[in-house]
Image (cartoon, rainbow, N blue to C red; front, side):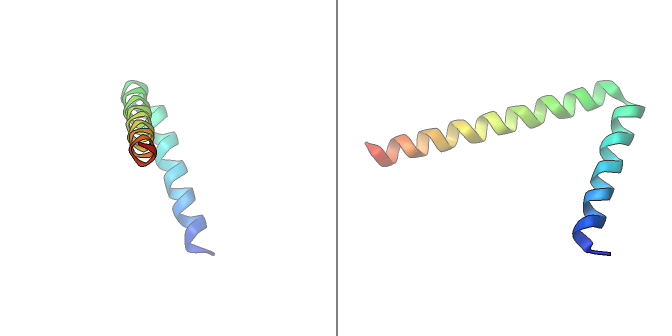
Length: 53
């Protein structure tokens, strides 16, 4: 078995276990994830703006 497949399976099991055992905490994780993505996108946008100026 490929190590990449094993890692994907472990992550999927962890995510499902977290959602089932603690839905409120899973919602918090999703919020933190989206906040991180939003911050990263904003930073990339600011970087690109600085390159153009």
